[in-house]
Amino acid sequence: TPKTEEIVAYSYGEGGFESGKKFFEEMIAKAFREIQRVLKPNGITCTVFAQKSTEAWETIINALLNSGLYLTASWPVHTEMKARLRASESAALASSIYMVCCKRTEKKTAYFNEIKPQIEVRIKEKLDQFWNEGIGGSDFFISAIGPAMEVFGKYEGVEKLSGEKVSAKELLEYIRKSVSEYALTKILKSPQLGGIDEETRFYLLWR
Image (cartoon, rainbow, N blue to C red; front, side, top):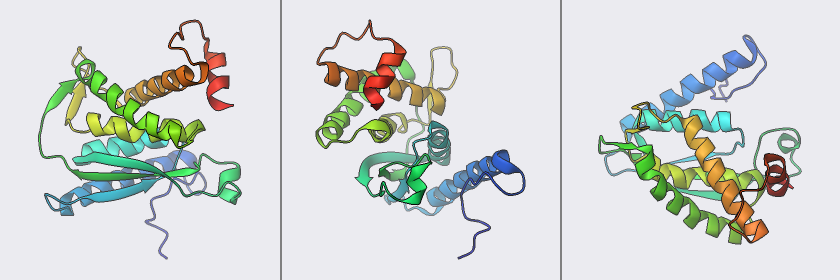
């Protein structure tokens, strides 16, 4: 199998980590643009991704949004073996995220504050399902990215009130906050979370 154009972000080789990261970002963006180009107007495409690194997800989200693809559905599917060598010291997940996308047909923008309630509703719908299915840890957070993108990705641009575009990093931070509050409410059986410090939140969510 040809390896020179394989889209991976290995940290070794000429240029080290930064070179590998740059190559991955450029090539994955190019791949999504090509998928969007050849996809029929009513066609769908499915992408499978398994990474718990938020930086990697930033790259995927940016590539999707900038390509003109719109995520319409996603599912976490338990595909990864815990005992495999790759899982022992890596950012791999127990589940792969299957993302179904189609072409974004409308060029519209929205303010983040306006669509936050829609994102919250969609995330909660799916988190209820994931919680009941026993999905936990980093998989639980990553599984919420798709539902949020179903709302966020409908728009060509999502802006703050200042006019600045909302970045993928900011979206992920918002998703993480929503997921942690949901999980803590479930664990503690109380919606009152104001007195819980960050260290306690981390322990409860990742133990």
